Image (cartoon, rainbow, N blue to C red; front, side):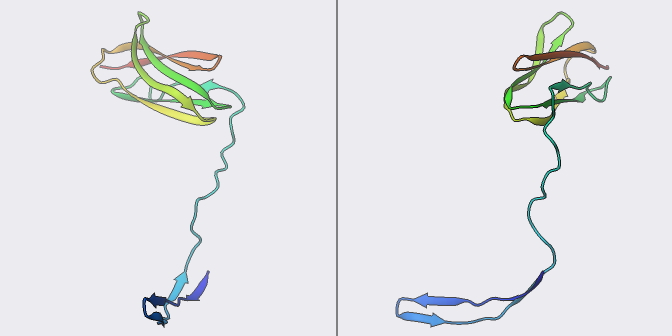
Length: 128
């Protein structure tokens, strides 16, 4: 916080020309990026989607205790893959993926998270 003086010095090809201009600048607050207090999860987890049941979008949250390649896929009740939401390396932490089921039939679907050796599936319901 405070008031500061700014001086401008101009240098040209014929020598140095100095011109001072005083500007008062009042700094009212601290700028920057706030430190995150989020801790790295201790274990892998896949959470129930929300909302559930839904139409047409839902959010699927999961957590990773370490960086790992992640796949998050949606399957119909016949076991056929209908969507891939994530298929890439991910950093440790808490993550979310949004699924838009527009164009798919109402009914029960499964979502499956694979992260290294961790695998877990849960059910979700798409409404008409």
